[in-house]
Length: 580
Image (cartoon, rainbow, N blue to C red; front, side, top):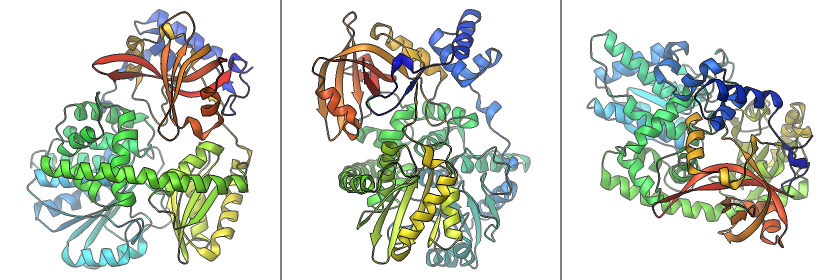
């Protein structure tokens, strides 16, 4: 039976409440432990046994971090890296242009600087060079460097790595690998086909961090000390993990939790400057990393100078940091304007094709390659199905895809590339990139739709909205939210609890910006609760709530603490609503 009898909400979803077994487990845990009941609900939903509950609430990195040597080529990679540092060789870091690539590069650049060494940073231009190593860049770098380290890229770059004649190459990556690997010193990647996949949840920065942990061990075993303080670098790992939407499970949970504490100390000039231009007025959280800092770091790679993000994250100069952060903030504003225009055109085109197909896709002349990934995410959210958005320029199109849980988009796109329908393509389960010849666009998308349909994408629709229980506004306090956050951090793979607020009235509603909605909700008993709904007008929900006419609704969403003017209040981040 649908929760609160909501079989089809304003966003078309059926509401599902917690199972009776979860409710019983949470109740038993609350009775037999000293843990607050709201926290017990979260733990029970996660399947945490009672005897592991306290350990789960205080995750220790030393207990959760895997032995780096579990990954193939790890010892070899760390040994070659230390050899280059010891011999003071010329090192180049070739990084992807997103947050994960920038953070990965910064980890290496900061480590080397603290060892008294410099390195060349190379980030390819998204439009001129595309993703990953290319023949020309690798050949040029090899002429002036002894070691090239590719971070967040390189696993599929057989040709470009072969072009790096005269230099050794090490790859530290997490993208899906093919059956054969590039011929180089080491390819460290938990998603190599010959890995067991247990560590496949790490982003590239997590892989780089593990390499530095292994380097630290080798230094210690060789009697050369331990090198720079790695714990102080966890702010970079946390930023990359959250921004790259890596699941917050296993070691990732501890890395992000500790990284947020490091970031709160405001010791890294680049992140301090970025937080200031983002007008962050509270302690860092997964939300601020994913929606405030991450998009600004990404803006350089999307529509500006590709290396701005990595330079910001690695600098130790506060003045340089402030200048770069300001530029990234401006680029992020420009990016939003470009994105809105492309999104409107892509949505119209996708709706004409039908949002009920196994693949939702759109392609347009001159659509900026820097925003197609974000727009693909919007299409995916609207349709509840995998989406691809492609910008056409001349005889070629460059695109990005985003998937939904249970559908492996990266593998399907990799299959298309191996079949010759794409110029190139790759990625991971939830996100992928591609280049396609204009003449092959329609056949490639038709074949991709077939492959995704075989995975069950054609049977998908708006996913059921899973709720953790019912709350009244009077119970939603700052204290309760702080208790719940003990079970965090929350994010991909570890969602924050979502509650239903039944039979409420809209006391106030106001459109904010392009598509957001701010509300004040009342149950007629307590003082009510304020709510914010991002992207409300991307669905029927926005207009329905704006033109409520005094009607009563059930509301659903996640709780957060809103800090304003030195005062903290509980706020609902509204995700869905249904007529009561």
